[in-house]
Image (cartoon, rainbow over all chains, first blue to last red):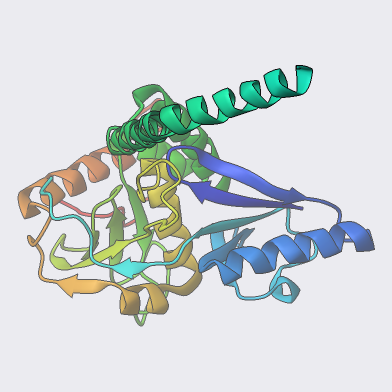
Length: 87
Length: 210
């Protein structure tokens, strides 16, 4: 499993990577996961529906991440409002 | 004799140090000031087109790996994504009662696929307050992916966090209508086989029929 974070001026960075079946690696993943949530990030797991359509799932704790998930993507939480330029 | 010379040398060094110390202090302070000014200026004008381009390339690759092949092609060709609304009576999917257009760093635009009527703009941003390169703005494709993930995962929450406005507040409605027409044509082209027949059947409701 890889924990990725979107970053301005960079694109995604790999925060942690490991096998959830290996306790030590899982612990590192959990710590990195908590750090990001504490920093105010949202965590999403890209998933697929039975119909084949791709979606995402927001997770609030590492326990909610499906064990078979390959990636968790962290991104800044949503805030209302956006720059006022017109297309 | 040696003791007297040694003492004299030490006194000389101390006197010299006392004379030079204020000048050195001022020079160090000035150096620090110049360094901090230069650092501030480089932060303000820290825009690096090459770095931003590489960031956008990485973001596009990530977006592509997360969305359907069709959605990726839509974004690549048209510059926006369509996400079906999931809170209506008909649920999410091609027959949804409403849908959103996702533009990079612009509000979400909700519309009725069957008529093309524009419903609302939902102003939402994902500012990274750590500002790693002096900006809180994600690359364009990361912004689109963040909106796509938040919409498909928890539409109600995203809409609640957004500021809702009538159409036209930030995005020109004419531009959106043109984009809906482009989308319709794009889907018709894509769904047509080499003989010109609709690959998806005659009952397929694309987006906006004109």
